[in-house]
Structure formats: structure tokens, C-alpha cells
Image (tube, helix red, strand yellow):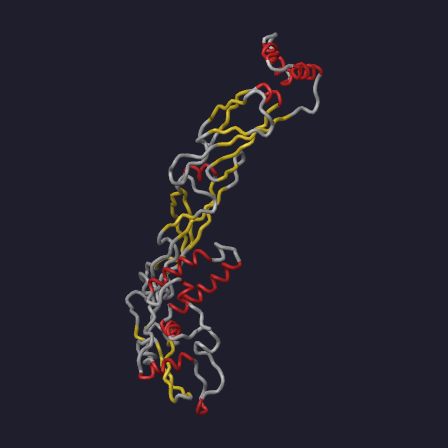
Length: 380
């Protein structure tokens, strides 16, 4: 059963070449193995490539429209068993040619254009947390194919021009006559001399060897918006590979990779950090000064704070990518309990443990008990 190549690309049978190209590029970006490691995505990418190969070729697309499959064994002009009248066997495409113009000397497809669109390129860019949080203009270096300035993409040496191919007479195809069970069939094939272009380059450009493009290293500046996350991509339109013959460049995608931070971990727009407190600070309360990404913030630790408590500083996380405020900073407290107590420390803790309710208030009035307790544990 023939594959539904139109369905694979999600286009109608009336789709233009541009429609097919746009659908292919969109799906290829989604299912490319470098982007999507899922094994099913890998198989899907193969089908997408096969569909584009078929529908971007006028002859193969014609076979599909007639209900055939040009990529199936024997379905696209491959060799097979013996033919009629003792002559060589010809493929399905050859038989179609006999009914659709080429048997009468017509041109089934015409010359292939030398100018074709370029491919997209991907560049990895590593940034610090502060850079992804607040944005940055980052210099990047990219190696891509660019337009050959010597020939401006034509591929010909200065002062020379393309010449009509003598083999195919500019048609881009050559015809051959074969005998089949239907009689004589005149089939067309891309010209091997000009590779189907209909023209040849007698004097190729010495800089690009006729390709119309050269590879070079370029320096660019990419503007990273505030709030980008690890794995996001920034698109630079038409900064990718220039196509053969000086074709329209593809796009350049800058993929963001955020380096781990020494203090903060990031979850979306929120930041998290850990602070270790001595037991006395948690028991008696204290005030901490937290250094955020862009300022210093004071935060109160209430008396009796328990281990693994979390304090929240609103609006000190990462700015939202769409510019709608900032996330929050969460401070996770680790309370450090001493493994060995001095006599004074042990006595202080016993006195503290005996107090309940209003007794604590009374105790605090008696000669600075809490300050003496803090001093005892701080080594004063």
C-alpha cells in the first residue's frame, strides 16, 4: 500500500512547492534527532525526509498522485524482471512517461534550478545565571556557508557566464528509447553532464569552485532577553547556511545552556539557596543578610525556627520572560546542632527547657538570659 506522503507532511494535494517546503522545515525542526532524542521521533524524521524527497520532485509527486509509491521496490523506476518482446524491463516511472508526455518528446520536469534555499544552523551558547536572568548582548562566532563575493553566487569566473549543456540542449533531461510489453517507451532522466540544471559552468569561480558560496567564520552579536531558561533557542533569521548558487540563507538558532551557580539553583522563575544557622540563632531568632542576584536583602528568622524551614523573599527571583514581574527567592534553613556542649551551654539549655509560656518572658528579664545563652554558644 502506497504511503500517504501528503498526510505525513500535513499538506493538501493542491499544496504548492512553497507550502511543502514550509511544512517540511517546521516538522524537521520538531523531530530532528539533535533536537528530539525520542526513538519514535527518529523514525518520524525518516518519514518526513522521505515525504519531502517525493513531493519536492515533480516526477515522483506525479506517481503519488496516480496512486503509486516511487520509493517502493519497483515503484520508482528500479530494475526488475524481464520485459516484453525480449527487451529490458523498465520501471513504473518509464511506463508513466509513455502516457504523460515524454513519449512524444515532452519535458517531464525541466531544468533544476541552481539556486536552492540554505539549511538552518544551531549554535550552543553557555551563559551564567545572572546573564540568563537579566539578559545580555553576547558575542558569538559561527562557521557557515556565506555568499561568494567573487561571483555573487553565480559560480562562474569573472567575465564568464553559464553555457547551455550540449548533451541535453538545456532541457536538463535526456531521453532514451526502451522496448517494453507496451511497445517502445521513451523515458526521460536527469542529464548526467549538467546534473539536471540544463547549463554547465565552463569556467568555475576560482574562489567557490562553482558552488556560489564559501565557508567562513563570522562574528555576530545575539541579544539574549531577560528570563531565558536552559535549553531555549533564540532565532536569528537568515543567519544560517547560504544555499547552493547563493540561495536564501536558512536561520541560525542559538541554544541557551545555563551554567550551574555556586549558590542558587533555579526552578522556572524562582531561585533557591541554603543557609546554615547555629542552633542558638534558630532558637532565639536572628536577622540574616542575603545577597541576591542584584542586591542585598535583610530577612528575619523568628525565635523557635525549626530545622528545614523555608523563608521567602518575594520578587527577588528571575524576571519573567514576558516581562511580567519576577519570581521569588526561597531560603532553605539548615540548623546546625553542636555535637558537644560545654558546662555553661548544657546548663543554659536545661534552664531554657524548663521554661514554658510566661516563664520565658520572666526569664528574659533576668540579667539578659538570652544574650548570655547566645554568647555561650558563640564562644564568648
